[in-house]
Image (cartoon, rainbow over the protein chains, first blue to last red):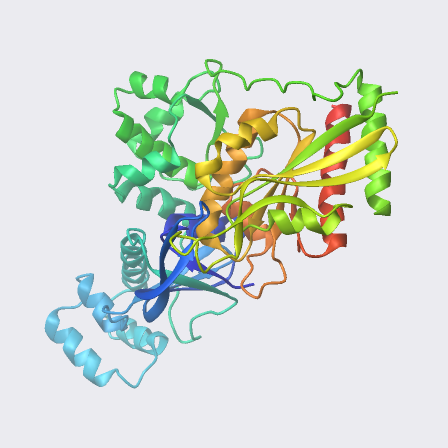
Length: 295
Length: 180
């Protein structure tokens, strides 16, 4: 099913995480924002200008939760250009191939280039992979674009797609996000601890962590607050936030309350009737259920 | 035997559908403290009225037991009311407007705040599922990072059966918690 929104409310990282976890297939379209004179309300009841989608700025395709292709408005996804940008073709080669190869599909052109020993299959796969990643990392920094995810919409069959694990993209993309404020919004309290998920499944398979991530991972324990881990790793608040944010977004760790955190206040008894016992409370809840069924 | 009163709190962001939810099931006309939105207000033009203190609905079970439903004001400037309303609650429902992703962050924040007030069971109601742009409950679960053990229920607050289902699921969760 399609979903839409604005990156100001739901970031690219969050969208990628959703697509990864739900193993979605489809295409994410991102549009230039057009600010209108109309207003909408946010969740706090604050007024803000309504932003509507303009021209498409980028599209990113996914298959069963994996990134497979991306294109951005001002970057031609033509195979010759991609290979040229990756340094696999020189300027003259790229120009000639663009001129003569325009009538061929990407797949046909790739086959011709491989047969002519211009490039190898590995060159093509790596170049497209890097091209796709560069676009997605760029898109992860966008902040106000309207978006639309169309389920089961895929690139044309003649396009070359390269499946890329989204978890690593999320970690690397988060690593590149330099803004401190969003990180503070996402992770305001460093007194929480971290734990590994109870059902990690294959989340950790094929993960490439950097040195700093590994240092943090080595201290993950429900008894250690994030603040304590930062101290042990000699990291600033911002540095630890960046690392933990990436791990959280990839679903590799979960937040839990550390032993040092205050437990929530116990509820005060109802003014009109404290529950005398579990049996009495159970009876009361069962009466409520019966009543609501009959309403 | 004195009458026992219990309460459930219906919370969520501005315009999530809390008042409608209570209105659909309450046996009395909802006692609402909605105020008309003035022309000078930021909310003017989006809703005719907004809840400034609380909504209040009632379901009488029998002579001995009454359930009160309290709806919280959605706007942050009235959040001093939240802790008061949360005191002694049996459980709470977090309403989310499934078609307004601009409110998801606030919904998550409200959920966390109420969880901190009291460790009572709660459910999340993915409201306005009849809206053509509604996010599915499955996508909302991921978007709001709701744990798998928390019920996230499709809801249309204007439909009584849908509201009944949400309240029943909350009550079942309360029973389940007693068993653990």
